[in-house]
Amino acid sequence: MPAAGKGATGKRRAGRPRIAVLSRERIVDAALDLIDEVGAETFSVNLLAARLGVRPSSLYNHISGKDDLLAAVQEVVTDAIDSTMFETDQWDVAVGAWARSYREAFIRHPHAIPLFATSPVAGAIRTMEMYERVVRGFELAGWPLQKIIPAIVALECFILGSAMDAVAPPDLFQPGDAAEHVPTLAAAVAAQDHGDGTRTESDIAFETGLAAMIDGLVAPTRR
Image (cartoon, rainbow, N blue to C red; front, side, top):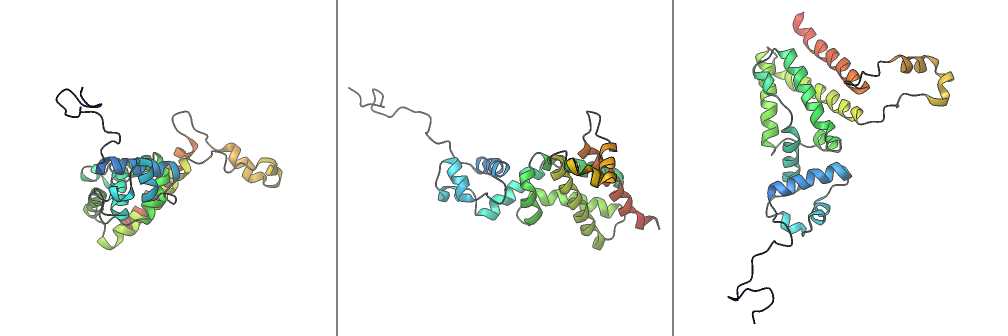
């Protein structure tokens, strides 16, 4: 009689492994899912290993360390940011389209914002390639090299803040029972454009700020 779990030939029958085979892609996707769930501050390699049901050492067959893993997570998030418009469109049009794409990418992953804002891009090749297109677009539009990075950083601070605003409660400025003590604030909150179903209050605030930033950035070049 063949042994349990074996066929008539004595060979073990093929079956599904108890644990899915690890790969770099699976690890990176799981890391982003975990960051989305617990936040960048709580995320750790040990927590990721527990989520995947493996020992932390098993992850290092596919990643060189936490910095390598976070760089790969950066790439996945920024893969959704379209920067190709800098190769074809006028500078102000390209900046607007890039900023909207950038904001949407981080609205989908708001917990990744602290990670992205504080982690270097070294190691995140695809992220650097995105920046290469943006910088080249600025340069082709006549920007001196020394002014390009400060302008991009200023835009990113605004974009990431707007992405956070998009997932924040909509009543942050509501004075509640204190309305009579701050009547001008209460009136301004009541009078604001609340959107029309296709745009939210956050979208309107973003477009207002983006237009002001683009106008402010190009103003020196018009003098």
